[in-house]
Amino acid sequence: MKYLDEFRDPKVARRILSEIRSLVTRPWVIMEICGGQTHSIIKNGIDQLLPKEVELVHGPGCPVCVTPLELIDRALAIAARPNVIFTSFGDMLRVPGSHKDLFMARSEGADVRTVYSPLEALKLAREHPEKEVVFFAVGFETTAPGNAMAVFQAKKEGLKNFSLLVSHVLVPPAMEALLGSPQNRVQAYLAAGHVCTVMGWEEYEPIAEKFHVPIVPTGFEPVDILEGILQVLKQLESGEAKVENQYLRAVKREGNPTARKILSEVFEITDRKWRGIGEIPKSGYRLREAYAAHDAEKKFAVGDLETEESELCKSGIILQGLLKPNQCPAFGAECTPQTPLGATMVSSEGACAAYYKYQRLTEKD
Ligand code: SF4
Image 1: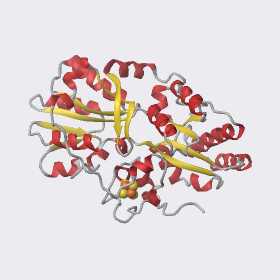
Image 2: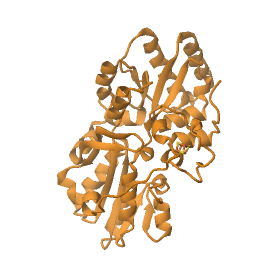
Image 3: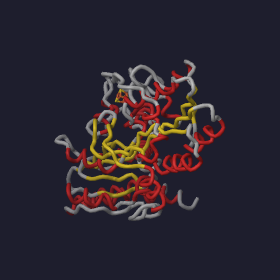
């Protein structure tokens, strides 16, 4: 199949691996940002095929994992209102709040529905003018344009019963925050390919320069990831630190101008809290004042909520690349996909879920 098989070709993968082996002279730590890349790495055993000097650590690029507990509790409080249809992508239903998840709220009678796009939630708002339809808008720059479009359309149609509970986060400020941490181990990034299809890679150039780290926007197939690793290793070994695009078939320097236009029409940048990591300045989107009528946080004043994280869960440290899922004492014991203690075990993009699914129980020798 054109555009797929060639990026899974074992011969090409072996050639890149042998180039990597002959290139590496000392230890390096590379972080892949995106949970989709983490799954591909673990599924294909890429981390285990690399020379022992090259360590891959997993980044915070799982939208469900970094959605703050407060917002999940707020979602639960809104969903419990009698006139509300609360909509969400499937993964969000199972992410534990302080005391329960949205799936449990549904079993207790809340009208919580899984949708596959925000436009589906918009359709529900048209069909149910007597109800308030709320869409839980989580995700990075990848999903934000679709959510922006939904609220833009709702305003245009005068649909007053449609609102977003916004929890959008932005990747570059998180990359900066990790690099600026005293505990940082990351020496190079594989940037999230999907995010870069929207935003391009211009905004990574000041980060590469400031922290002297190579950054390579990378795709999701095994050959993409190996090529991305080779590109950052070439830079690391030669002392370079620049942005180089591996994902040429999808990513342009300026990204997608149409998507960026709707983002800046509907959203403005704000400080955001990341679950397990804490507040990162200017790392999220909120609705602009012109769209305040569609802002669920303003529409449903649910007040300050007391949150309670599991004491056992280490997902915040995992999302910062400081621990691997199989090093968490609860992994596979108290915490499994059936009994998740943290969002990283629930989400289909979560690092803990990847390790569990592909039985990555021990570190490479
Ligand atoms: S294995 Fe479970 S408890 Fe441990 S960090 Fe992952 S989600 Fe949290």
